[in-house]
Length: 263
Ligand SMILES: NC(=O)c1ccc[n+]([C@@H]2O[C@H](COP(=O)([O-])OP(=O)(O)OC[C@H]3O[C@@H](n4cnc5c(N)ncnc54)[C@H](OP(=O)(O)O)[C@@H]3O)[C@@H](O)[C@H]2O)c1
Image (cartoon, rainbow, N blue to C red; front, side):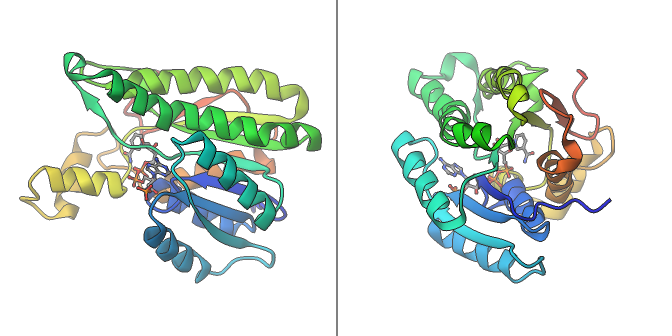
């Protein structure tokens, strides 16, 4: 089965690196007009050029938009710019995020607020901007990239676990409200997938071994004996964004190679 996104416009936040970059590439190669969104313009430009250099069907486009998604005003301006450049938005992937986890007593109010603004409110605000158009056109896809901690939190995993659980609740609420309008909302719960985030963890670990060995050693502890690849996440996101997933909504799919103990 060939999955196509021809004629669709997609926004992928955090689209310059890691999972977001892989999803942007997959969507572009499926024929979509893709807006990648992140803060650093130089990284965005490199990723845009790399993706544009790959083969894609006629009509596919890739454009970069610099924006801090934790800033509601900036999100709104970015959305206006995307619509002006690529047309009304059919698909949103709320993916921008970063790993933050500390012992509970070390977390300040600001830590909590920053996590909520980046990982929850950005998704709330961007979805609110695209929602009326999706409802009016009776077609939309919202994909929230979360963390398996949303289902199975553990010690020292806040604020992420709490914010991601809220993201899962948001997914279910929106799926209920979108279903009558053919606006489908799902979440991917990420376990451990090789990305820039993992490279930064390797750097923080002291980089005593090369990155490949670090990734391989980490992977040995996982059920499938390896970390996931960003392209594997992109394949699932492409399915959810496509017509092939036309009866799938309100799901929180573990993208973790069997790591999460909860279905
Ligand atoms: N990789 C994993 O194993 C894993 C595990 C669990 C959950 N996740 C989640 O999956 C998502 C993608 O992770 P990843 O591993 O691909 O991360 P990554 O490699 O670190 O990439 C993060 C992306 O988000 C962008 N970003 C960060 N803060 C932003 C902001 N305030 N505004 C706009 N863009 C922002 C970054 O670009 P700039 O820095 O230039 O803005 C970059 O494009 C994140 O939400 C992460 O929490 C990943």
